[in-house]
Image (tube, rainbow, N blue to C red):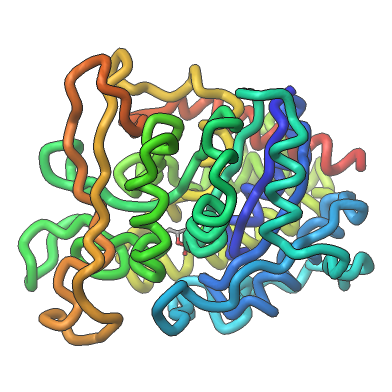
Length: 359
Ligand code: BDR
Ligand code: CA
């Protein structure tokens, strides 16, 4: 099993990351922490607790992380996740387990990770990078100890794969989702992101899951059907409706996907289904073999920190852009997979849903 800590900002897709982290048989979950991001911190924390309650993991304590970026004011993704961070979701229970108050959150993450055998544990980040940046700034020996850091964030764009976001009038090809260049998690706290990607030890232990990859993993109608009725269900939705009653957990995850689909259709005109970003970062830590990195290509990632959070394109500039340079073999660097075995990824979601049903 892989010892794993998840830092997240639920978030519709973060809820799926929690599902995998809690129920995939390969994970030994060390803990969960929250960060500002999709919604304000109190909300992402509540959402994490409610999701854990829903999937039968009330015993997992949620540690409360940073409420704002290192140098900037917080930005929320209201258009995508709603004011609550999990809008459109009515099937979440009230959480019973209070958030952890017994320890400083960075210290709790550090202690959990450093207690694992060297070179075994993974830290997975599916939100803004504030907690992660501060953690590695504070604890010098942590990067050398862990096996890996898996991050959902960034957008590579031209020269790597087809730009995932299509064209924009303003900038030609657009590859970010928050600005033409920047992906949300990196854009919100570029200073924290810079700490992480410029870290001399972490740089070769990091796997980055950018939009270029996550936009290959869409929650299509077929996917939604299987989420609800399970992989053994009849393919014809009408037949399934009459012969299966979906469990509460399945109905919840379908509901989460349906809302996410509606905002992606509205905001980005992506109508086949929403990209399910965050669970891929968990998956890359526990199933590295299902990700295609073209025989081991590795990259240097530079974060653009010039510019201000703004609606004005000139003021924003390339703030939060992940500039990616391919490194010669043997020089280390960040793993940025270009593809994933979709069938295997969805199978792990399905098996986690089955486990959550039984929990
Ligand atoms: C990332 O931003 C958030 O809105 C999602 O939860 C995901 O982590 C995608 O850009
Ligand atoms: Ca997220």
